[in-house]
Structure formats: structure tokens, C-alpha cells
Amino acid sequence: MRKLTSTNYYNQLYLEDKCALNELIHLLSKRWLTDVLFSIEEGNTRFSSVKEDLKYISDNILADRLKLLEHYGLITRHEDADSVPVRVEYALTGTGDQLSELLDHLCKFAEGQMVFPD
Amino acid sequence: MRKLTSTNYYNQLYLEDKCALNELIHLLSKRWLTDVLFSIEEGNTRFSSVKEDLKYISDNILADRLKLLEHYGLITRHEDADSVPVRVEYALTGTGDQLSELLDHLCKFAEGQMVFPD
DNA sequence: TCAATAACTCATTATTTCAGTAGTTATTGC
DNA sequence: GCAATAACTACTGAAATAATGAGTTATTGA
Image (cartoon, rainbow over all chains, first blue to last red):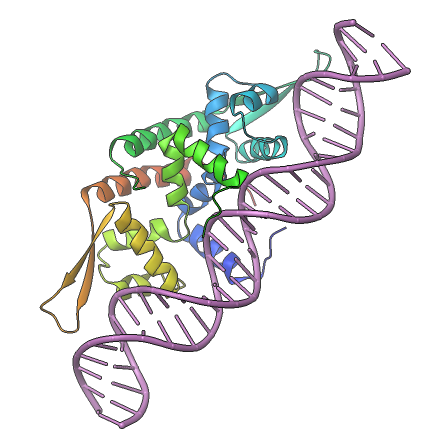
């Protein structure tokens, strides 16, 4: 639970209010989040296949990241009611797709232009 | 100081190794960092003018973010030796300029396409 | 000489985020 | 009927990050 009366939190609000980019980066900075997004984009549409793809991710983190991505409208969650047991499938939304393209650009920039010392 | 023998750290390394984007996002996610970059781009070339521009930032955080931006080749630090007292001026590098453009795109996306609930 | 400013550093505490472990519900295969 | 799998939730402790506050060096202006 987040403390709502700290300078830490006020500053966060100030920055998110100042520019939506801060809000987006705060989301993207959650560990594994972009990797989950890319993994789904690459065809891992199930909880278990993403989990296998990102071999060190733990269940609770994956569950949380999927929930976040859905909450922010970047993926959809679909329960196939016919199948028994219930299969859950995830897919990118249009917005999720656009984001993944933008992140691709950023990734190329990181690989091509940036120097990460050490 | 960072602990070098934790799963937390190993996962970070794994992700940064997997994709440079994770490294970049980890940098960008440091609070105030993109704001300092934009502030310099907008003409606040001195420690004190950035500090004034980002009114709630504290000295040690600003000092740290400037050091990081310089370390990663996104800004340059120039001490004007002639002036007394020594004036320090910051400016974006070419890479810093490119990054700021990419972040502009991301910002427009965040403002136009994303929905941030709550 | 005394307060003020620029551009910082350092140490301590507060907050947030991450990982580890266990537990849940429902169903299939043996 | 018993272990195994899918897709989770809940709780606890560890690690990373941010904020607070004081201290530094050099210099200027009153």
C-alpha cells in the first residue's frame, strides 16, 4: 500500500501532472513489464508461455504485470469459456501495439546511440 | 551501494543483457531525470536555473541526475574558468538531443493514446 | 566580518518495489 | 484417490530509491 502523505508521493503526483510522459515511464519502469508486452506480441498468449519465455520471472510478478498491462489498456484478457479447464489468452490492443512500435524505436536508439559505461 | 549477490540484481542484469531498452528505461525511470534533460534543453543551463525550474527537486537529487546524464553522454558539463566564481554550464549532446526527440514522441503518445485510470 | 549564493557531498531515515514461499480452485491423467 | 498443471492471490522480508538535513569551498556584496 502506498503512503499518500509523503513528499515522495507528492513529487510523483507533481511530475505526473506536469507531463504524462512521467506517468508512462513510471509504468514502463516496472521490472519485466515491457518484456511481458513484447513476449505477448511475439505470440506467447498464455500465462504459462510468457512464464516460460521469461524464465526468471516469478508468478506473482507476472500476474501483477499482466494486470497492470490490462488495467492500462495495453493488452486484453480473454477467458475461453468453452474450453475446460478455462484457458486464458492475452493479446495486445491497438494502443499496446503502438506502444510496442515506439519502444522498438527506443530500443534501436539504445542499441545504436547510447553508451552504457561499466 | 548495490548488493551484487541477490536475485534482484541477477534479474536486473539478465534483463539489461537481454535488451538495451531495459537499461535505458532503468535510467529514464529515475525520478526527475527526464525533467532535468528537458529543462536543460529548454535553456536552463545552470544548476540553479534547473533547480528553480523544477521547484520541488532537492539539491542532492539534482546533482545526482546531472552526474548520471553526463555519465551516459547525454549532457556535457562545462566550467567557465574565466568567470569568478566558477560558473558551470550544462548542454545537451547530440545523443541527448536525439533522446529528447524520441521522448517527445513518447510523450505525445502518452497524452494522446494512453488512458491513465484513477 | 557576516550573511548570502553556487554547486555541490555525505549520512541517515523513509518509502517503494521486488522476491520467496505458501496456498487456492478446478481439472486432467494415471 | 493422488500427483500434476494453469492461473492465479496473500503475506513477509529484502533490496533499491528517494527525501531530509547538515556540511563544504570559494566568493561577493553590505
